[in-house]
Structure formats: C-alpha cells, structure tokens
Length: 139
Length: 96
Length: 158
Image (cartoon, rainbow over all chains, first blue to last red; front, side, top):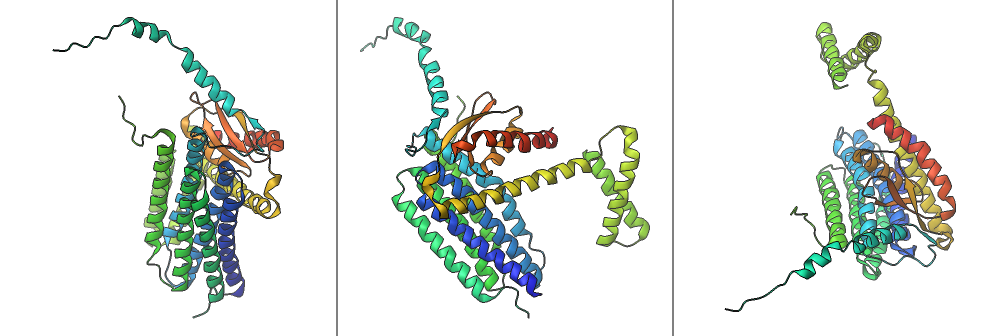
C-alpha cells in the first residue's frame, strides 16, 4: 500500500467524522427546526458517504475482496435521507412549530390560509343537515 | 502486512464520533418539539453506522456490515412512521 | 431501450463463445464491440443510441454529488462563522414537470442543494414550497434550479 493511498484514506476517514461533528454542532447551534434540517440532512449523508467509501477501499486492499454492502449503504442513504428530512419538515410545519424570529418571508402560510378558507366557506351542506330532525325514541 | 490506515487515525475518528453523539443527546433532551427529537435519533443512527464501519476497519473483519444495512433501513422506516404520526395522527391510511 | 441493452449483452456473449475464453476482459471487449455495432446499425431502425441515456444518468448523478459537496461546505462555514447571519424564509417555486416521479426527483435534489429544503408540494403538482436559509439569494436559487435540474431531469426521465 503506497503512502499516497494511505494518506487519502486517512483523510477520508477523518473528514467523514469531522462532517458528522459539524452536523451535530449545527444541530445544537441553529435556532430553529427547519434550519437544523439543513445541517443534518446534508452533512450526515456526506459523512456516511466518505466513511463507507474509505471502508470499501480499505477492505479491497486488505484482502477481503469486493465488499458490495458498503456501496449499497451509500446508495440507500443517498436515496432516503432527503426524503426523511422533507417529511419531518412538512410534519413540523403542519404541527405549527414556531419559526425563528428572523424569518421574514413566508408564502406557505398564505397558501395554507387560502386552502383553509376555501374549505371553511363551503357550508352548503350545513342547511341540509340542519333541516333533518334527529329524534331518539325510548322504548 | 503493510499499514493501510494508521491506528491513531481510527482512534481519533472514533473519539470525534463520540463527541458528535453527545451533541445529539443534548438536542434530544432539550429540543422543544417532537421533530427535534426525531431528527436527532436519525442522526444517532447515522453516527452508529459510521462508528461500526470505523471499528470494523480497526479489527480487520467484515462481519458487521450487515448490521450497518439493517440500522440504515430501520432508521429510515422509523423516521417515516414518526413523521406521519406527527402530521396526522394516523400512520396507516385506510381508504373508506 | 431495454431491447438494445439485451442485444448488446447477447453480442458480448457471442464474442465470448467465438473466442472460447470465458473471462471478464473478453466479456468487456465483446460488450464494447457490440456497442460499436449497435451505434453503426442503429440509425436504420430510428432508435436513439442508449448510451446517450446512460451518459445523461451519470451526468445527473454527478450534479447530485457536486451540489451536496458544496452544501456541506456551506454548512461548515455557517456553523463556524456565525449562525446569526442567516435570514430564513419560505419561497414558492413553480415547476414545469408533470409526472410524480420527476417531481420527487426534483424535491430530492432541491433538498441536497446548498441552502434549500423542500417543505411542501401542492396537490395539483404545480409548485413547490422551499425553505431557504438566506432570503437574499432566492432569485439566484430559482435560476439555478431551473437551469441545472429541470432540463436534466426532463432528459433522463422523459
């Protein structure tokens, strides 16, 4: 194993763990749920990518042959991590988690208000329900 | 056998991953909403996957990569279920 | 397109049978020769050469990875340099894509772009709501998404 490859693999392992540390420092320091999603969805995916790639080349050089599970984990995490971040953000917005004071521009609340007002004004069914009489017979 | 990655590098990266893990625990305790706790549990899953890979590089054995795959799959499924629960309270959609 | 791929693999196997050696380099050589034959004779049947599609998929994956690397470095800079400099906001983005598969791919790529996360997709599949870290860069983000992602996604997924 040449020293260039050794240095490259060491840099990848250290870089992967540093990106994981950056992801959690962002998780601690950002003021808002939606901003924390930015740091975690991107940096943790990157750290998995680097460390699994380093493991793949390590076991290739160590005599264990081609270990395709490492590549499979990379593909899986790339496909599912943005979807997970999107779903949590959407659920948090629907649950009305407060946004940070600094957010200045919100078009989604206008869209949601339009959606809610549209469904509330449609009360043509209410008159039909009011005219029915419900009587309970005691036997 | 020639050295591919020095042991010192693997030890330092395990230490850094442990520090990242502590940060996630802080956010899981303090986080004011359920979404914070859900995302920090997903990040804990990612950190554990990285730590298993680094440790298996240290002991020169490929036995534990199946566990990495299973943690990835279960982490994603758990995150989806919790997000669906926070959103509507109904995890499985029944068509009426 | 699948037919072209199967024909290419069949030509590679025929080459291996002709050479009487069943090793990987022979398979690769037969595959390349089959690609050349399909390229030369494919003009007659009127189909597009399928390697063009493979190249477009590789290009899309390359854009994916490049945007994610830039995003990670932006997170690094923000975490070290000061978290209070951000100015978050939510913007609306109108798309021209139609099928759900294309919109899912677009939402995933937007989530991996520096500074943006997809929040919601409207019911009629017409617009996306994006949470942006710095609201001053909203216009450049709109142009970037339109230029980089939409054309490439339309070429890959028809």
